[in-house]
Amino acid sequence: MTLTIPFDNSYARLPNSFYARQAPIPVRAPRLIAFNTELAKILQITPGDVEEMAEAFSGNALPEGAEPIAQLYSGHQFGNYNPQLGDGRAVLLGETIGTDGIRRDIQLKGSGPTPFSRQGDGRAWLGPVLREYVVSEAMHALGIPTTRALAAVETGEVVLREGPMPGAVLTRVAQSHLRVGTFQVFAARGQLDSLRRLTEYAIDRHYPNADGPMGLLREVVEAQSKLIAAWMSVGFIHGVMNTDNCSIAGETIDYGPCAFMDSYHPNTVYSSIDRMGRYAYSNQPDIAVWNVAQLATALIQQMEDKDAAVEEATEIVHAMPDLLQQNWLKRFRAKIGLVTEEEGDLELISDLLTRMAQNQSDFTNTFRALGGDAARDQFTDPTAYDAWSEGWTARLEREQDPATTMTAANPAFVPRNHRVEQMIKSAVQGDYAPFQRLNSVLSQPYEDQPDADDLKRPPTDSEVVHATFCGT
Image 1 (cartoon, helix red, strand yellow):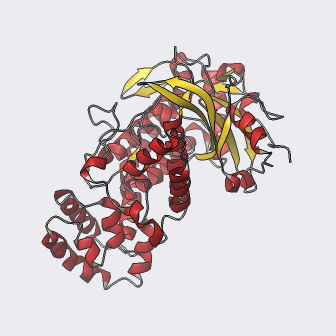
Image 2 (cartoon, rainbow, N blue to C red):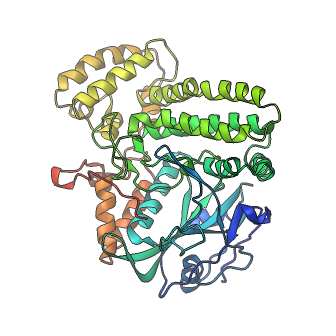
Image 3 (cartoon, helix red, strand yellow):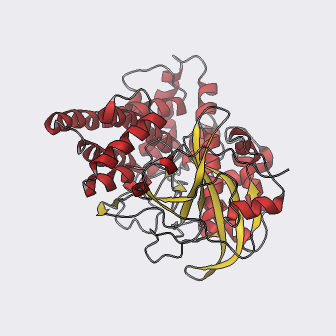
């Protein structure tokens, strides 16, 4: 069979000021590492042979109908505004409409320099490509909105980072790559016609029932509130929540220095570039509100009655913390087996989390084991769990099937940092068995898989990953 992608490209039909036309830069010796056949079926892609797909998903050969572009955007990075960012190491090949009726982007990451590269080489090395493949697919299996991985390809070339690294290209799929920063760049430049066109495009593509710019803002607030609560519920730390990494579609995007917590502590940070803890685990809800406020500021610029727009946008953004709390509470109620709502639930959940932080309890394993001795064993002082459990047990008496609720809300498996790092080290040495195993086990995170119990184990002292890196 011949590789066929049914492209239907809408973003490339927008004005040239939205992007730069840029073909991928060919690589020396592409070799296909992985191809996501389940996702390909949704995208209505007909696979080709291994060599053909390696050529296509490395950027060496453009599939028919592709219109490669690098998208323009700006953004706040750790609170500081950068007036022009853009796709510095990625090109959008085009879009497809899936069997589910959803339009999605197909993008190559690590495909070479673009006009937005800012002296970068435009490439990616194997580690971050495999990390994003594993983590994004794991997030999908966890039921959390996310970009997905369609393919990964070795390039046969060396990329220089802290040393020589093997190069790779990831094919990423997203409902779109529209970011808060996409709106910011036109607002900051005073290009109001482009800002209006972008707003109309975003509404038409993602939220067709939204009423104008403020309607779009309301929808993004809703989507981001649900997304961040979902992150918190599985102990996920994005690590680099800049506005250029905040998706209008409400998907998790740009897996750089991301990580999942082992021992629970609200101030946990892994990202090597987050030296002040701006994007710590517990700060993520506040940062989401801050990011959406930057979107509101951009959207207001196109409104005729700016005073009225400021008033409405302020009301929308100020409502977001309560919305986040509601979504968080719904997620964490389920994690302790609650479906009904009672006034003391927040205090019950918060008390458990406080005790977990004080007792170095493993986040994933504690919640998965609730109700049994294994949960008690997660505490350095088991009596701390016993004291909490008394009130919790009484609360569960008013629930119908708490065990089923907890099983569905608490994964047995997440992509633990030390296992991801071990997988990357093996792959660099040519062994992809750990990569394949992680993908297989993490595709069913809520299922007990006795043969994979080793993947549940927290790291030993020598295995602890203290910092994660962007890899750019």
